[in-house]
Length: 247
Ligand code: ADP
Image (cartoon, rainbow, N blue to C red; front, side):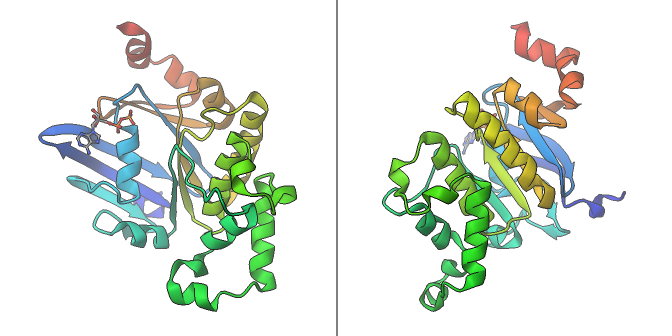
């Protein structure tokens, strides 16, 4: 496996804010089908890594190759079009629209004015919206106004809004924050399903949830990777123990 075979290959990714290296020589290689979790204490640089992948923050140094395309110089909307979807911690759904409408406006054709004018509710579009609605457990709530969904359902809807765009890489920031135990289990099942067609990177603090979903975990501390491996491996890593229990 050369590095160009990976869906996503990040090398030496670094960003400085006024001389302070928030992320320092970060490397990550993932393939389709992999769900990677990034953990680490507050301020470790986790959010900044996702921000750099989706173009919200520009790196100072290093490269991000996605399907062999260099992303570091691209604007955010170009990165979305290249197939990278990002969900932030707070849901950004349209509360006054229905579940169906939220999914519909996220459909790729709706992205340009001309696209939305020409937008036809043809069967193909309807089918793909229904498929996503089933995946996110909202098939019986298509006509419900989004503001009446539970907190967990809103999070799923936002994942659904990404899925209709068929991204090949999905970035999620604490997807189960505030969810009930049942909703967490359902989210784990959802993630295990959607990762089959793509790669997923998650920032997560809930270690029980990490143990449920992750095969491989990357641990960040002060901008640097201090451990990488299975949950068991990183939990038994001396540096990791020090960071989490040490001070
Ligand atoms: P995490 O997500 O792991 O909690 P962050 O990526 O949010 O950590 O932050 C990493 C470090 O970078 C923190 O010290 C934070 O204050 C700093 N930082 C993040 N973004 C900026 C920015 N735009 N300007 C200056 N400092 C920043």
